[in-house]
Image 1 (cartoon, rainbow, N blue to C red):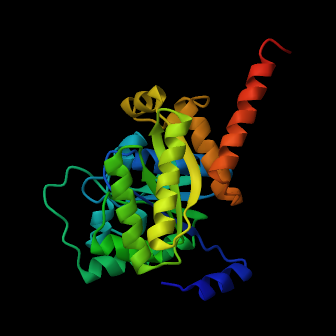
Image 2: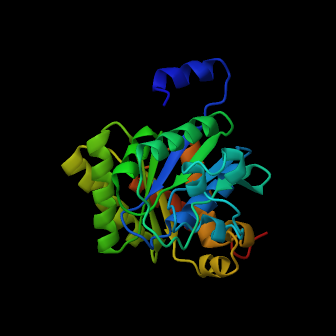
Length: 287
């Protein structure tokens, strides 16, 4: 893999070098794949070329959320059956995806050749896209941690459930132990109230600071939203079907925060919500 100096040199030569993002969670069922796909869609709306790589091999569901029937999978590339072009599928004009496949009957046993092919495809994708979104499988394995080590940014998804918070912290600890300089962002999903999301993010942030001496960057929270479930049932992205849904607006804010790098404190986030609420109240009945 290229080191940071090599990536900087290529950028100075105006050659494309994609930013790689790993979306991770400590446990399943927190909405990680839904985040990955809708985050990618809203990044693509800004004109970026995106590829989503489903790393939950054998149990992936990215293609299902996109409403696609995958022909070939990442596993078939890793085992040498097909080339990158064979397994890469188009979704929208500037979004492609690589499926991890689903309903695999056997447990994947990684070997050195498979990992080398994974790093090889990573290098190829870096030259073709602006962002590579790796939708990682839940939990930590040796090979997934090896891959995460090579990525530019990590986005950790949690819910407000105590077990999800604990598992999210454990994942961050695994990553931090391997690379203490890794950029880590946190998102709280499926919050019932603003305060609930704030408390979860604050708890994760404080715990990482106290025990890891690690500063986590808060991207924001996404509310529990019936539109998300409806979109999944229709095998489409909620950002596509429901542009004004609370979850869509939350994802859009998260994308804006990530893209601009204007990471806000929890107090600043609350202040913005308060001001927005005031504007909403005073604007009623006007115009």
